[in-house]
Image (cartoon, rainbow, N blue to C red):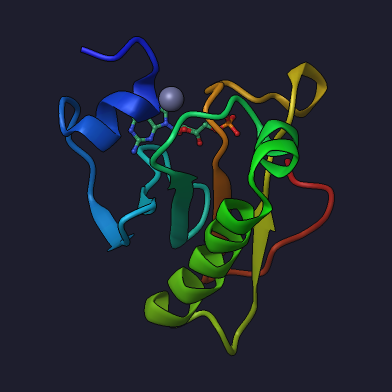
Length: 114
Ligand code: 5GP
Ligand code: ZN
């Protein structure tokens, strides 16, 4: 099994509830949702964080961002509003070192997040 948790999800070794998939990205529900809509969007290839992805492949970064906005639409929060977050590094509390955009919506989202 892949050492990286999200690579293991991409490989199908760990189950996840898929919301959207293309040949290069995967979107699945967060296991501990912080809002009625809480979906993670990742590239299938492993990059540790959004900075590494941006440095390596802006096209794939664009697909991840586009995926986030498509998720918002299919989840029905495109009109009510939502937030896309890329936690990056220790101070942001990034727990999984495989770049992922959180798509959060379906409730009022205060800032800063709790
Ligand atoms: P981070 O803190 O790295 O930005 O976010 C990692 C996210 O991954 C957390 O919101 C956490 O709930 C989620 N997560 C951790 N393990 C799993 C898992 O096995 N499956 C899914 N679907 N989400 C997970
Ligand atoms: Zn990975």
